[in-house]
Length: 367
Image 1 (tube, rainbow, N blue to C red):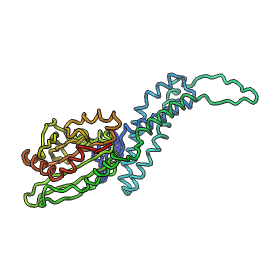
Image 2: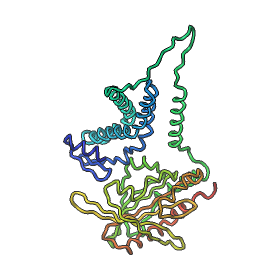
Image 3: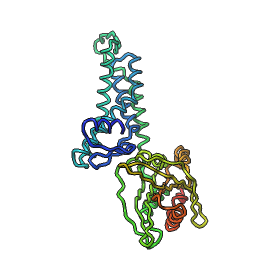
Image 4: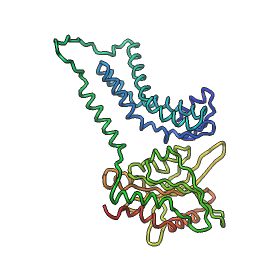
């Protein structure tokens, strides 16, 4: 995001950057969500792998080019971001989004060309990049097969591993019914009382794509009698590992916020205890300081609530646990709201939706 924004300013584009969020012509482009570089490493790595074994390069040159894969991925991804952000500033956003998605295929070609340039530069410096081979004339009626057996095997293995990570089979039985029930009840969230008004907010498609969510809710609540209010977000992922990208210290820092230390908090709903963390977020935007308070908790089937994001990681390694999914609930308050009022509003909200809290905490009734 830093490299792309500075390059765009250099060619005359009026862009602003907050963390990994680039804004051009009033249209925000979140680089971390819409174009995560780490997700491109495997794609670019396969292109680099294909190049070094399709050409008779010396072993040292092959290893050098393979070692440069992260830098090649960064260069290719920056090129993709630059062109995508420029398109957002020049054409309709729907066409720009289509262009951005299409560029995912072009990145592989760009990576291949970068490899060609690296090897050409190696030769320009006076080093021999290619192996010297003595071709043997084939005998009559002899079929000569290309010697690419083990490179093809490794490439197939890498592709299989990548596909296995992305593959999400349709869940049936108790777990499938459980996820459908969570999605349905998430849409039926109720405010703390009748005096609270609700405003639905659109969830960016990039966020849904990043989290591979089963249910996402983003709303604003305001009490018509007291004037109190808060923003609320619920994310439920069908697999625990998909929730690893959703954590306040990570998400808010990417948007340019300075994240304070976590402060533990406990909310009570009758006999049930919900553990969470409170974060103070600050940032400077357009010369004006902003500050919000973010309350966050994670709900894990069969475990209950937890305030620690690290508690999700062990569940990813157990297939049965991972497929149950996990949820994150988040409340955002203005800095003027005191701690006692925050706790009161969060507990009122949890009490009003205790059925969903119970469902998210207990998980499938039968597997």
